[in-house]
Length: 304
Length: 251
Image 1 (cartoon, helix red, strand yellow):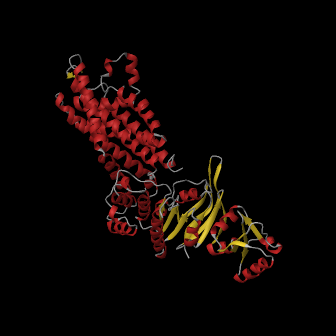
Image 2 (cartoon, one colour; image 1 turned 45 degrees about the vertical axis):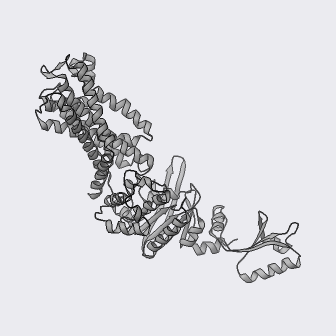
Image 3 (cartoon, chains in turn yellow, cyan; image 1 turned 120 degrees about the vertical axis):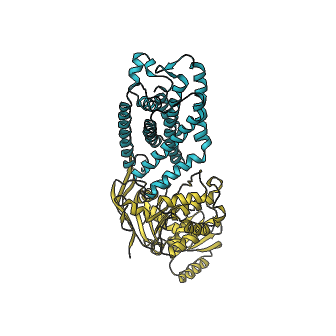
């Protein structure tokens, strides 16, 4: 397995702020990789360093084996970046924008591929429209198209679905998934944890410029989250002591986590025996949100 | 080389798409200067003994337009790209800092020459004007445009906001171009101001450019060429140094 992105001991300071504090990371070719973390954790700085938009103070970054500083031309050819900000050049139409972007990468006569991207992103009808006239969602799609003009094997999406409607989000993910199936390596940052959970096979979590968790999504879920029985008791009712010991309560909902479904019945039996009346009951699946919260609060894995 | 070619093409297309504002407007401004100044001064002033004031003024206005518009092109393009954030489209591709520099400077020269030519076409009807040596004309127009285009890159990268760029333009570019002998021969100035003018590189650009038309000038065109050439090289090196370091662009 080849390494698509390798980040080695990368550190970067902005004045007194330590944006990246010795980050080590490797993304394998063909992976769908998630980069998560709260605002200010260093995700965008890391992506900027990867793309050559920011010079790091120390450490080394390679894209498909090409150093992003020493061999920046080769590295940048391997990389497509969809920036977080909704930026555009108001002087040009969609097609002009994509032709110019192709030219920057030394590609001429790229219309066939441009048409294919436009088609896939549902932009064909807007090809000759000026960028100014497009809606926010359309502009976001053009940003994706711009990142793809040079057919990069590695694609980085920095919060691509922030403020994007449901329909576009679906189209976008369908397309990105297909690119991933075709062999492209995808790196995604997002605040929508359910998106990361369903798309990414491996996830790194950043906090204050450090990698605080790095594992396959399945492993993270297993280690930090579990199924949970969530109960709302009738007013005045109390959990029996045995159940109360293992329950956590938040907003009037008691959660009891479990690993196997046959653990549910004894819990319910205990409640029945205690004469505990329930108003609501649901079974929650392990989710990345719980993982995220636990990791960010510095809690250990294996729910211990 | 293709990244450079595309960036150059994009920069030319950018100003050409709004040519009313970037070409027609400065031509009109120069024409107004000519009409007003020549109306007031034509009968009072002769320069170099034989040259009418209007004829003297035309090359000055042409060169001033070349310089101001070359500066405006690179500086406004960069500040706009920085403020709107679309500068990222140029920073992500494999374009070297040298290609970046060459594309912006060359596009600035093209804008300067297009406007300068426009001013010449608009004003040439007002006085008999002959070109003594077109090589001088071209050399100073290209070198001067290149120098101001380079200065525009420096200003566009340095400024974080539009008003900072406006300050650069109003407090540096305008005084340097207006006090360079566009509207007068510096021999008509009191000695102190005459001396001071010799420290203004724009004076040499205008004087050398004018020499191409009349075959006479305040100082030797070779001296002007050396000074303008040296300034161009120094400023180019400074700009390239800034770009190589990624000053304000890659940080």
